[in-house]
Length: 498
Image 1 (cartoon, helix red, strand yellow):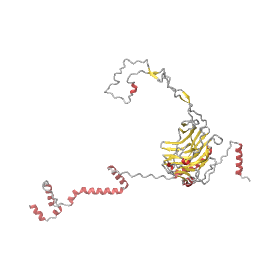
Image 2: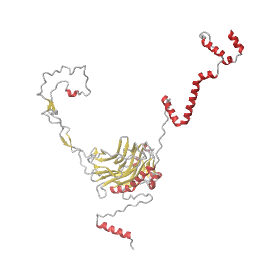
Image 3: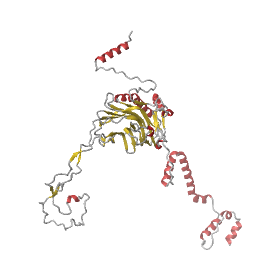
Image 4: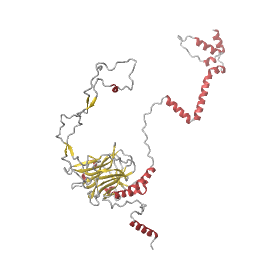
């Protein structure tokens, strides 16, 4: 017995085959565990899922450059963050070091090229880049190396010939998705780099971004970032220097005639200087009661000396230009998109950032296949990354170094005291009350002490005499009021009689 689901599927398939306008939209089911989609539609692809850090350069695919400046490069294969769910199992190539030259390449199994034949009408390169943080200086562009019998990726350096250079390049004010291709002059067989004149900017954040370049046999190109078109146009018009030379050039033997008039305006020969025009008189004389206005425009007052007005030159024939002759170096290239074959995919860059991830390299002939691969890899992972970024704890701000403490001034002391009172109001109140009592006691002592403790007449007499003495000649001797207060009465009487 045929199940109902199979019957309905058969009916839908029959209807779709009979009517092209009818399409059955079957959503793609994603497995619970991470797995890499098929890459069989690519000419060459690299997902790094089947390799490790130790095995990466042990095989025959990836090779490090033996150049001196690349000796310290550290490259590894790592899984993703645990916050990415199933995409934590997604491996990627990681550029570990900062302030480092990187140089390594993967040799293709056979040369890859666009020649306009069936199945080879486009050239598509695509890959992912992820910065661990906003970068200030990092090159992460690819070089598709020109295939030749002498190509040896072990000797890779910045002079190694490439066919195409494509990818993000950010350093200081330079912020662009590079697209440069080497074009061969069919007349001289010399190569010249053609760079995109106005390039899109790099996506600079902590998320993965996928960059795609497609070159077509009709000499057009398309650039995508995150599957969105960011640049397209013609290989003939948007690159500098231009692919084609001008058909005509200036004749180097042609000289400007001596009678050629290039002056557009001349003084009016009919103009006569006014009789009252005195060029010897000063232009202005001082006016002591006036000051020059701030908006005075001297240009509006006319020239210093009289000159006739200007009229159009009747003999003016325009600026002289030499005649044109056919360009002896001109050539016609109807297929600049049919570039030299590609023999290897390389990364030869300088980076001031560390832990940059590169993943899911794709090289093929079909743009739609590359986009589909990106939807099944980058797009799903990108959504997981956005959620992971929200779950990341905020980084601790670095503690600033202690600056030299300045001596607090009076106002600083007042502010500190006010803040302390606000923080401890009870203690401050008790302290103020205690101070008030102390001050009150000092203030009352001179008046109340005499009434509470009557002074002996002898002591008072001695104090009065001491106060009236002339202390300029006789040194003052302190009076011991305690001993005087306890003298016998006879001694007091004798002293008074004397």
